[in-house]
Length: 446
Image 1 (tube, rainbow, N blue to C red):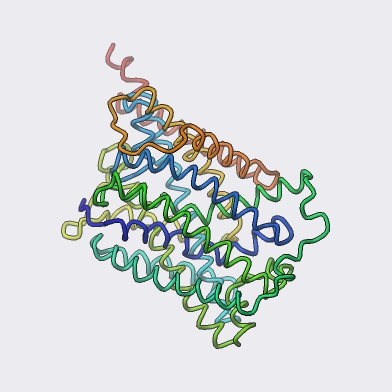
Image 2: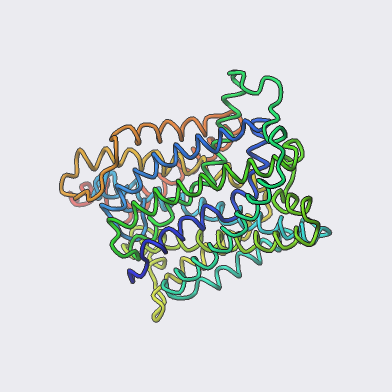
């Protein structure tokens, strides 16, 4: 694959994923989780956990700058001939479900903002709109990586412009008292408070999650040992400022009790200030942002599937590249096909299921991989070492556990456990048929 992305493009890929549709569709959910403006704590805690987790990603990506990101880290950290085979296989196995969940959530968010401009759409028509967005973006991705890098910068410029419009309009028109209209007992340190903050943090982490997108594309980044760590840390800090400022701006104009139930909060915000035409213009900008977010999701996940197929550790067809453009064709088409049926599900369920599965299969094992590489893989050079090691790894791991361990997410843990059992069973069946670990020695002895 071609290393055609520098620092600017790398940051654009991350920030476009983070600033895409996420904050526009989850702000109401985050407010509802804590029942008031104190939900800003979710954005702040989420940013802190993301920086700590991002340092883990940065260290691993700089050491192993290849396509596939976490797939490579898990394989190498846990011994590629034994447990690394299983964990990397499980990562790809969960990606087959997590990637469509993530993509479909963004597509549903896109469709809900379309409904703001066309309010008479039925539920079926909204779902079909989400499907159309998925198919259209997949078509756009059938082109070389250099073109994609330039396109990401253009879309990111539009997204940042929209967010600056929101923040500027809010600062001019906001009422400070309304923005910080905390309900009685908002900061009472009860079980409900901590569960609410955990839920708000979980959805905030979903929005910050794009900081690791560039690790999936590490095989296409120039000077990855420097550009990837910089892109990860800088993108998190920049986006955190946008999220907090935009949240305060909006609830300073629209009462939070109204904002928490809105499905198109930013369009409602601009429409209330400047009229329906302005609200429609903002909707168009958000739709562009949503398409950009879907664009980066499919792009990043397709490289993960490509890495597994190219090495023959999962489905070999995923490793096929376009003969001229050198991009993974089969992986792109499969992701699109799997995402389409999920476009009929509610967005909050898609996001929650995706996050819980990722925490179990990817985030916690990836953080442990940092310890494993430092202790057992002295042969792997670490050109970037995280600051204050090991505290970022410990904080990130505890943060993921805290965000997911709420009563609302227990059902998703059951499904994640079922997925884990199915993944292990699939690996054992495959490894037995191919004579690989843990059956290689037994077959050899015959």
